Amino acid sequence: MEGNDNKMQRKKYPADFKAKVALEAIRETRTTAELCSQYGVHVTMLGRWRQQAIEHIRTGFSEKTEKQDKNNEQVMGTLSLGKSYCCG
Image (cartoon, rainbow, N blue to C red):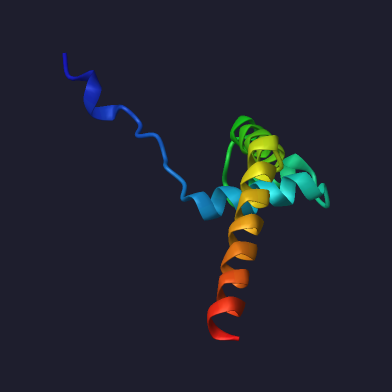
């Protein structure tokens, strides 16, 4: 049985391409059908990328990230104080 020779390969898209298409879908300046036609992707794939982008945006503003930002500010403040004592 030689049926495996005609098996289609799944196309892989780079992350920057997915982000570009997902952002256009989020903006809603064109219909999903128009975007799918322009970029040659299936409607299901576009919907998945859109949802993933929205979820990544949400997690980017999570509590953990805010705590990391505060910690970074404290470290930078400490470094600034050290500089003023030793060099100023």
